[in-house]
Image (cartoon, rainbow, N blue to C red; front, side, top):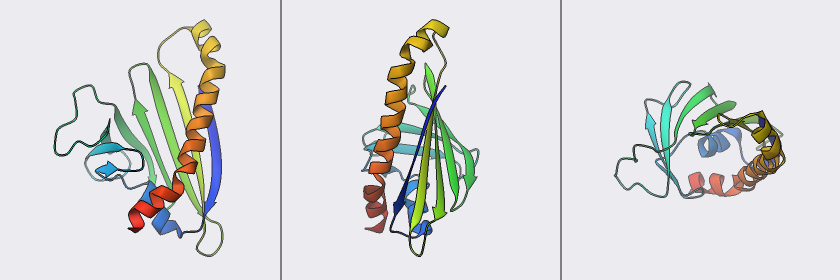
Length: 151
C-alpha cells in the first residue's frame, strides 16, 4: 500500500470548498470526468466515473466503480475507486484556517490487488512517485474546482 498526503489553504469559506470538492456533479470540466451517482450523496453511495462527457449515454459496463466510504458534511469525504488491478482511496478533509479561509488536506492511497510481493517491491518507487504526483495535482486543481462552482 502506498499513501501520500498534502495540504493547501484556499481563500474561500468551507461551505464553498465543500460544494466544489465533495458534491459529485454529473460532469467535472476541471477533471474532464463524468459521474453517475446511485442514490443520495453520502456514506455508502456508489458511483461510476468515465473520462469525458456522457451526454445522456449510459457508462460502459466495465467503467470504474466507486463508493463514498466516509461522509461528514463540511468536514470530510472519502471515496474508494475499484479498478481491476488496484484500489484507489481519496480522502479530503476540510478545516477552517482563518476567516474565509479553508485548509484542504488530500490523502491518496493506492493498494494493488494483483501481483506478488516481488512485483510490488519492484513497482513501489514508481508508485510512490505516482501517488505523490496525484496528490499534488489534486491540490493544484483546487482553484479551478472552486471557480467552477462559483460561476
